[in-house]
Length: 141
Length: 335
Image 1 (cartoon, rainbow over the protein chains, first blue to last red):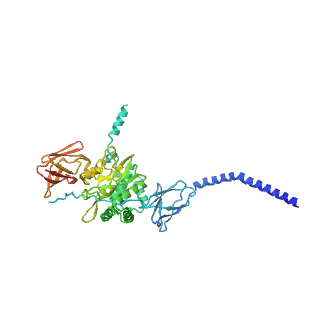
Image 2 (image 1 turned 90 degrees about the horizontal axis):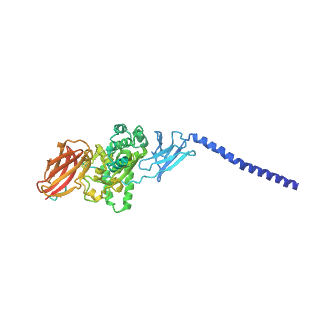
Image 3 (image 1 turned 180 degrees about the vertical axis):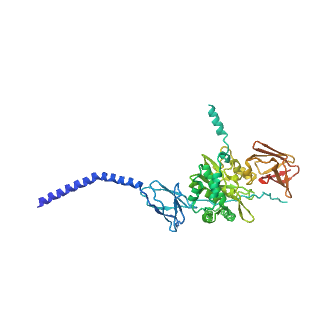
């Protein structure tokens, strides 16, 4: 009984070894089939959602446009958006908002949600209006 | 061999960056695009840029459409300018307070730009830059000193003006959308749209006379040195100088001293054909303004040359006019 048990365990172990080995061998095959799945995904259309904020919170009214097209959307009061057109890997979304640095986001196969932090443009404000009033010298007389 | 000399000649005599480099381009399609987008606001900049530029063929036209739209739709807010000037002067030597002020003011400027389409120079330069970037154009803001008849020209104030540089066909050009858009009345603070085409891709030689950049690379004067002191000493140019001239050559300085009956020579390069009879001076001796003809006027090719003699002692403000267009001002101390 005891010997039998040991034999059984040995059999079970060798079976497991074979099973593990088989898994290891078949793994590359599995990985390959996954690659194929990704390749199919590239051609798939992606629905992109996201949220845009600055250091103080969500930004309302940020323009998001598919580069080179008229297709776009504006963020709502929660800074959120759903892009109206399904996108493909390689498409570029341009995020712009007056006073903030423009950002380009490249869509890849894994993109579904974009969480974007925009930073305000560093601009020194100044401005002299022009004048067409003739110059007049200051005279002491 | 000959070809090489020819190339050398072309490179050596390449003229200053200016609008005439684009004489082969008809900008009317771009101008029409700017006009048809008149009612579009800044709340959707990508759409605005698309509508302005998508049907245009060259970078020069695309930039033109953007620039024209800004010049015709953004108003200059004189009160913004005055408030900012006061604070900037006050905090000139306190960089922390200046930064705090600028951060607060910047937000207000952008809000005003978006909601009311009103701004000051940096706002103009900023919006031209942003719209250009959306059209894949290489455009930058240039900060510096703008000099007009109203700026305190004998004082070294902090920088007071912003304009743009744009790269077209591998060459940088300068333009001033603020001054091109119109003129605010200093008495009423009311801004009036009055487009001046002379500030679009202006000749860099003319532009430097009343635009001195903080970063000297933006003088775009490749081999010539033009120093801040040259700028401070230069004559005053008015908006109409830009519609009539491509260059202002002589006198290089605003304040001149000379003897009675000494001949003063003025040399300019003309942008267009003018009526020789329309050239005159308005001379202010402190009591009266007199319209005076130069002693001689010659136009050779595009070069306008004037000569004048003062025949009595005194101190004179001398304004050059071409018909009703005020071009420039000099002072003469005659002893």
